[in-house]
Image (cartoon, rainbow, N blue to C red):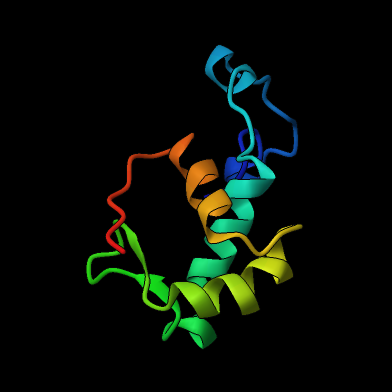
Length: 94
């Protein structure tokens, strides 16, 4: 879809609607988490469920040791879960 104002060859920019003014970008935590879960090369450690509505950490120890430090400034799985809980409800089963 073309940005507002660029549809039908119109090169002018349409003003932002009042709804757009209050829209914000995802936090770095959410962006990094999405990139991590969406990476097919680590599906054996963390991946989306079958319908893509949630994700599963299959190997928490490997996730903490190998993946968390690549995306975050720590390797603490509990800290990751705690931060995730500030955004969404999750079920954690050790």
